[in-house]
Amino acid sequence: MSDDPTLRLIHALSDTLDGLDVALCAFDEGDCTIAWNRTFFKFFPEHEGHVYAGEPYHANLRRFYTGRLDAQELPNIERYIAAGVDRHRAQTRPYSFEHRGLRVQVASQPIAGVGRVRVWRALALRDTPGAADAPNIQEPGYLRGPLFESTELFDRIPDGLMICGEDQRIQWVNEPFMQMYSLTDRAAATGLTFAEAYRHAWAADGPGDMAPFYDGLSILQENMRFAGAPFEVPLPRNRWSRVIAKQGADGTVFHAHVDITDFKRQQHLLAQAERSARDSEAQLREKSILLEATLEHMDQGVAKISATGIVELCNRRALELLDLPAELMAAKPSLVNVLAYLRARGEFDGASKEIQDLLLHSNGGVEQQQVYDRPRPDGRVLEVHTVPIKGGGALRTFTDVTQRKEAELRIRHVAEHDGLTTLLNRTAFLHTLQAAVADARRPARGFAVLYVDLDGFKPINDRFGHAVGDQLLIWVAQQLTQVARGDDVVARLGGDEFALLQRGVSDPDSAYRLAERLVQAIGQPTEIESHFIQIGASVGIVMAPADAADAEELLRKADSAMYLAKASGRGCARIYGM
Image 1 (cartoon, helix red, strand yellow):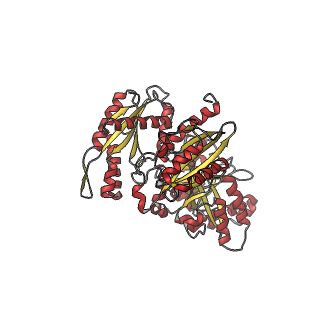
Image 2: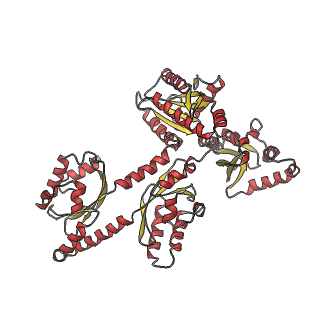
Image 3: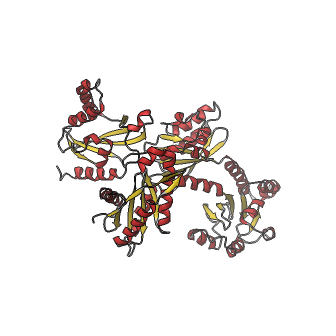
């Protein structure tokens, strides 16, 4: 059966899941073992050295229950094994259980012509008085949830934050999200889809005009299919939320919910002005006093360009946002002249080439409806919205979206960085590593990956406590950053494991010398909270593209070389394959 393409695919999948700390074990149609991965033994060390191809599943269960059951339950082992086999054959939905200090979730999927594949992933450490007997939380294979450990940080973010799993169900929300959607606590949100949370917000507000709700539900259901495309939904009491999503490599999706109620109110005023402008020139003259008063008190900058390219109207806010002199605009200049004035001051230097080309066009790009963001030299970001007018010309609005962009950057930073050390996290490092792999196809673009694991860290945690341990991890991150070069990338993979991407090297000697400097830097004694502490580090090195052409494979091989360094006596470095 080793030549079966489906089985070969299962073996490849098991290797891939190792890099994600997901355990896999596959069985044929007779419930006999045919494939497994290394993470399976991390979760279930009782099977190490005993699992073999062809082993019946009931033998696997017997080992599992023999180590799990106490003397009172052991007489029931045969009944437990039989129930386990039946559950294995009939399982259709994931379930979870505790094992060796972990909350483990297991899913099972039948595969035609092969049998059934089971996968496990750890959810969280069990926080009980017996946790001291649990596996070493710093050891590889133990999964933590750093995003869920710093709820205070997320609760201070002014915008709502929602984290969903691959099944699109909510795993966690912060306090601003609960307030925005009328939820009493986090538990009330956990397990809901966003659509269900949205329904709850409207139901909690009581009876009223439900037309906006049905519009918003339609928008939500259409846009939740695509992570990354921002969309807006109405909330009760004439409030609005802008939803921005970012999907992680593990399927987790981070959603930022920004309250844009004031912005939508301004848009409503602008829409009224636009409708007035489309009526006719006569009606526009009759209402010009009211329109100008409205425009002068808007938070958005507004400019009206005629069919002949003249800027006929420019309100006070537009002058402020664009830093335009009032005397220039009072003379009703052409749009081409205004753009030339701004260009001479370097206003478009930070814009994309596409936007610069658009603004170089003779009519300034007013012939079609468009929206784009333009950075200003003073650091602010303007959202520019152009709406063509029937008969020629256009209305152009300018909105200061600097705070919104900063909020999006904060959410992105939290999603991509380790909350303790501020280094890149594992997911972001893998993205960077994969980009380096693609770049390595060009000449002289080789690089090295160094996998760093601390030696003697667990006794520090056990002796001085996790607060000192956390400070020590921060110190290690600083040491790594100081030793690294300016274009190298340092990340914390989890626990006491770090990684470094060394760019622009093709010879193992350069990578080895860097590894020695890392070991020396981390091996220096340091003082933390009046404790003199000294630890060590073991480093595994893999060269690219010589040893691998895939980010996960590179990290896996560097990890393997690191374990060889530990086996060699710790406090040293080993190069993969050497």
